[in-house]
Length: 513
Ligand SMILES: Cc1cc2nc3c(=O)[nH]c(=O)nc-3n(C[C@H](O)[C@H](O)[C@H](O)COP(=O)(O)OP(=O)(O)OC[C@H]3O[C@@H](n4cnc5c(N)ncnc54)[C@H](O)[C@@H]3O)c2cc1C
Ligand code: SF4
Image (cartoon, rainbow, N blue to C red; front, side, top):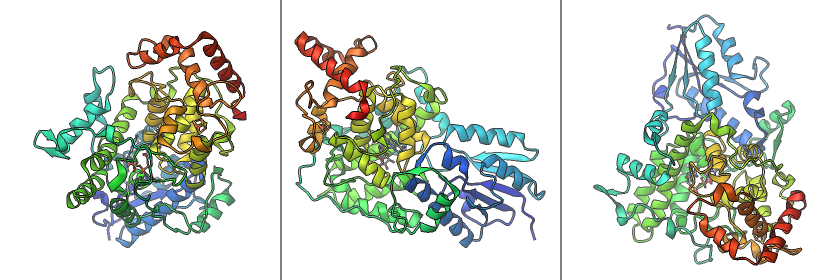
């Protein structure tokens, strides 16, 4: 009988059944997975996020065992669990049969540093192995972005379409255009019914009791007998199928829409499954393209292109930004914003209807779709001058799909413009105009979307002008923003004074809004 020689670490977001490691059981290999306080505590997480990861990890370990692999699974409440990766690995390696340590490359910078340090400190051989998940390697971005002032997603996306031959007719994009973004901006108009989201009913009550007993601090709500998120590859595939059947047809059209009628609209809600690597990005793209090809009469090119762009473009691009800019990205604060994150980010208790809706559903489901994240909660935090560290702590904790490699570039760079415009050519800020155009929120709000001063003025309106006013030096020369200053300059000085006064009043106590 072979003795165990190789210890292989699998992290909680590395649940890729298709990885070459798992194709054949090998008596010389022992896998280790661990639930640890290091990961539950580095930021306060939504309770559904902690439980979804643990439940998916347990299901994955079980699956590996069924296939004949040897797995050591350290539960959070296991007395042998040292609660950090390094301590657990060192403890396991004390058993002398291991002659080699291997781990899958982590996607987070902090873990990358930690694991490399750990591996280098060992007296046995080691190797970091690719996760076989992404469509680009970390190094690819350095080459792609080298010497560029801005890291434009569009040129990256086109290159990816070419490279993977996706939605291409030879050298030309299918449909004659690379990007159908302008057709992806319709408000929800009731023209087609919104599909009921496919929800799972995973019983995680035992896990929930365990984390409560251990004193893990979480926030948000959960029904422990019916966790709605997929925790296995088969559930992930069935969520993807439900989206392809019901959501894809209208995905692009209503991609940016927001409505109190639904928390998920036509979105796929597969980000957790993708980020935990239960789904592969290419299989998602290929399945979507197959569906489109079979139903070209009812699924237009703008729907499929809009969806492909998110995964082939944005997702890979954000990863590239992360690895290109880390670790300095984590410290960026271009506007030197200092305000504290208002308390209603943790409670949804605010009179602003848009914020109530976006935060409320985030606390209830650990989910908000992209435009709610970018143009409601992110927009408000930027206008109000909240410190990016605090904004990021919230985004990293609240969403089911929040893992730093994708959360940080989206939050700090794209949403808070803390990178000073490396990613987005201008800050994503708006007054009530945009929110009203894309949602039904304003009609149900205590504030008046048409006012920028006076008692009931919508906070987004005065804070919007105040933002441009106070950052004039940093923004005025930006060609894409010049128009904004010309509009502001044309305003009556008395009007300007009132708007800024209203903004001051709101900023003095953001918590009252
Ligand atoms: C401030 C902010 C923070 C964000 N934090 C995260 C995060 O922590 N984790 C995360 O996965 N996404 C994050 N996003 C991106 C995006 O909002 C989510 O990926 C999306 O809402 C997930 O829901 P879905 O699966 O229904 O997406 P869909 O709208 O159905 O899109 C399909 C898929 O495209 C990918 N995608 C779409 N947009 C992006 C994007 N901008 N960056 C990366 N991938 C994208 C996702 O994998 C998503 O599952 C953030 C966006 C913003 C503005
Ligand atoms: S009026 Fe202002 S605060 Fe109210 S929902 Fe509209 S944008 Fe939000």
